[in-house]
Image (cartoon, rainbow, N blue to C red; front, side, top):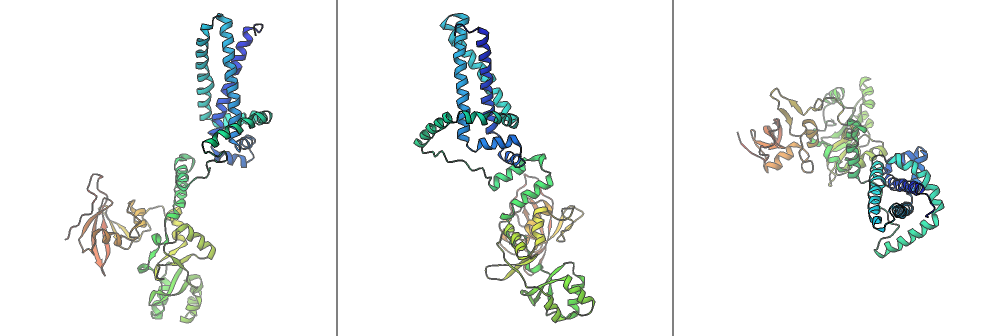
Length: 432
């Protein structure tokens, strides 16, 4: 080595530091790539993504190759630095100083800087690096295989199987985090729809159904004049047909089948029953994502929610489920809520039978939905009694006043705007 010019040794050292920077940066770039974006690019036949995907199929071999190359060039650089130091000063005492200088240079230019750059722009580093690692892997495969085999033996001593790999699948909560952190990449409206879609499995038919007491339909026991008036004035396209009570449902009427007969004066009790379609029953605890698939499979758009005893508890439609995903079909959050009437003083008159989820959506409240499903149920549960007119309480920091009681149920309440956050949010009761 004494015959080798000093300039050649310095150039070789410089090249080795560059190689060390390449191995360090490419390792970080390859390991920090977004796997889902990589898969997307590979599906679109992006050449760099396809090569990287091939490399990452066996991460142990890729890491073995990178570490083999990185350690080799670092050790060779250390040897060259020792030779250069001896050539310059001809004193072994300076070898330590030379080693410290090389350590600083490698840390700064071959470790921290390239790894930081690769972490910030992994694709710019990883994709070009793959063009080098593919042939290098083939060339050094026997050595890499031996290195990995020895490493796997050591891993087995610690009870780790080399075949074990962390699952790349996202849980529901992890996927929610991805959607939320997407920020400007996903429009706010679309983000909300995606989150609602993922929440369908947490919501049941019971949470969104129209309560039995509010179901509008045709009673076969009514006189014919009442029946025809109900049909003519109906705002719904589908109406339940029953006898005396909804629990004795006969079928579902589609106005498309009934109105032509009505206008031609061909409609009577017999033709009305013949036009009815067989009712469809749903367990009230069915999740919405399951029920959406059931509606699709059964080619239905409306069904009756029943409890464990088979009694009808409410009615749910396909539109109700779709509104849980896309939101209400109106630009005004409370415009279509017939059970909520805004008052001039900023309060709202609300029907006691309103669904808790509907109330939360309309007034931006955060009432619990895992207990009673209606406002009436929530109030009676909180008070542990049937209230009287004039009773007041706090719900989600909103002052609530009972306006009307009918048939032992809360018929109408007045909800005032929320108090400040420091107000006592416990239930308070006063009687007029």
